[in-house]
Image (cartoon, rainbow, N blue to C red; front, side):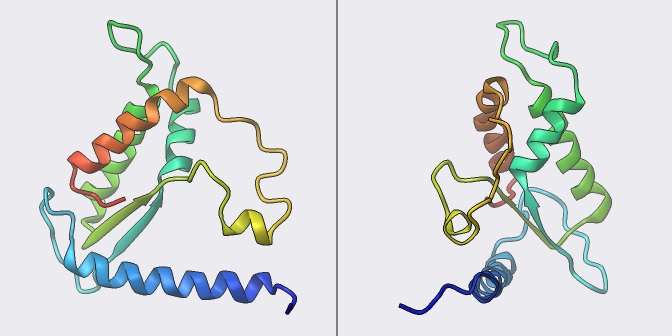
Length: 141
């Protein structure tokens, strides 16, 4: 068996993803938002898990519904996404979220996410709401 070349495999996967996104976004712009074209169309690929994590720790955990559901990550994520779309007017946007199961990165990079703390349960509880907002805004994921 040929030794694994992580750099070549990752680059190949990155090229494939970019090619797929280019075709996908041309066919599916953010349909529920006004689209303003610039001389150079921009397509955004957002790390939804990272943005949600940042929002969770940036805002007070006291932000919650009357029933006690925490909403700090939902509010922060939504604010960041809406501001980006409003200010930059991209031709398209895609939000990607971490998968719960191991991926190709785990196979080629033994230390991938090594030492990273477990995602807090209150943040996990907000992720479905965040994904629903992404879908409601017409942003693909």
